[in-house]
Image (cartoon, rainbow, N blue to C red; front, top):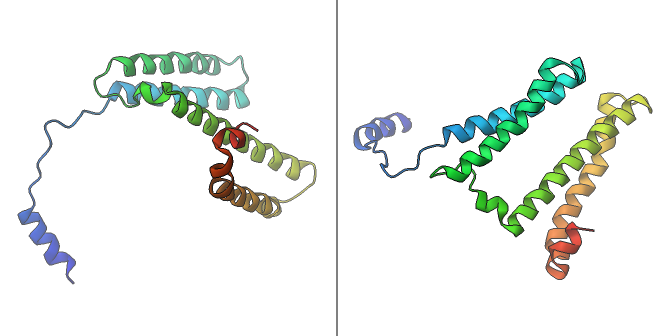
Length: 163
């Protein structure tokens, strides 16, 4: 009821002005980063179905590090980088990013292989497997929220992260 008149008034009063000093998006960075990650995932996925010696697998797995290296070289030279490398090279931030990457990869691998084990070796259905993971998920959530509130202020991040 009120939205239509408000939209009409807004269209008449608001002027679309672009900021001339607004930094441009880093198109070469976007293309090399996206292409490198796509090639990496495609290479591993293709290896699972067609084997490690397949031409597409080899080309993708060679292209991925080349594209990601090109991304780093582009980001070092561009005026407005997609990812300022100083953020990654900073010891505290870089360490935190590495810890998050390893934690995420470890959890993903754990859930993947536990799913395979529970379904193939124990004979659980997909629904029963999901229900079986609920206690673990609840404990992970409780542990992560509790540790940042109660443990980290007393001990610091390093003992919690690196133990």
